[in-house]
Structure formats: structure tokens, C-alpha cells
Image (cartoon, rainbow, N blue to C red; front, side):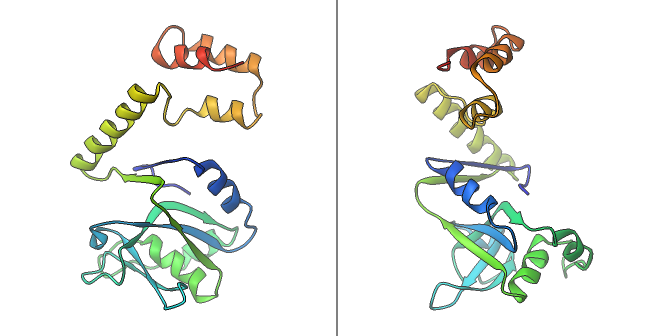
Length: 184
């Protein structure tokens, strides 16, 4: 699951996600160091780096590691979600679902290092920041950010001819031109 107001970027991200998707049971989430952890679900680690708890929007955060909006959960998630009750804030919290995995020892948190960018676009300012980040990457590197067609091609889900057809579907707009310029 990924929350719709999140953007992830970084070299090796695809491999990180493929590795997480290979887990057949339990849940894996990603921790990301932030300056303002009180805005997020925060991971509390023990001295050995194991997860002790996840606290939603704590007044006094136990760490600077926020849980990103990217979750890999197994087939027990729907049943677990049905047991979640509204928090003191009156909301159904994803952290409650994650705590159920933590309680039975099947939750892992993988820290995302400096080579990754996580942008939570839940505020006007952070949405503008994300737009500027994507624009900068696109303009400087000449690469699209978040191109499902490019990913499908790289993973072998579509072949060169299908990629060329997708480029033609988009005509002469920037995205179509980008796809047409990829190496067939």
C-alpha cells in the first residue's frame, strides 16, 4: 500500500521495493529521518535497533524516524484492519494496524538512508516543494519521475514495440517524446 500524497525517489529504490515485496508474511515499513517527527507516525527503537513501538503524531517523539506512507503487508491485513478502532483523535490510524504486526513479532522497519527522498505532500507547502523537486530532476536530468511505461519496459513487462506504441499514444507531448527517446 502507498498513500497517494507520497513521493519516493532514489537510486536503488526499485530493488528495495522488490526485496520488500518478496516477503510472504508479516509487514515491512520504511523509516525515514525527519526534522519534525511530531507530524508523523514515529518509530521507537530499542538499544539493538529493533522496533519497540510506533506512535502516531507524538508530542515527544522517541526518535526522528517517521514511518513513510509505503507499507508492505501480508494477506492478514484486511482481518487485522477490521479490528482497528478509532484513536483518541477519532481517526482510524495505520499505526494501529502496524502495532498488530508488531505485537506478534512480524513487523520490520527498514531505514531509508540519505540516498532516498521521501516527500509527503499533505500540506500546501510540501506539495509545492515536491513539485519543485520533480521539476528540478526532470529538467536537469532529462528523465521522467514516476513513468509507469518506463518501469514496465525496464522490468520486461512490455517490449520495445509496445513502448513505442505507448509513445505514439501520447503524441508529441513531453511524455510521449520522452518515451520515444528511450532506448528501444
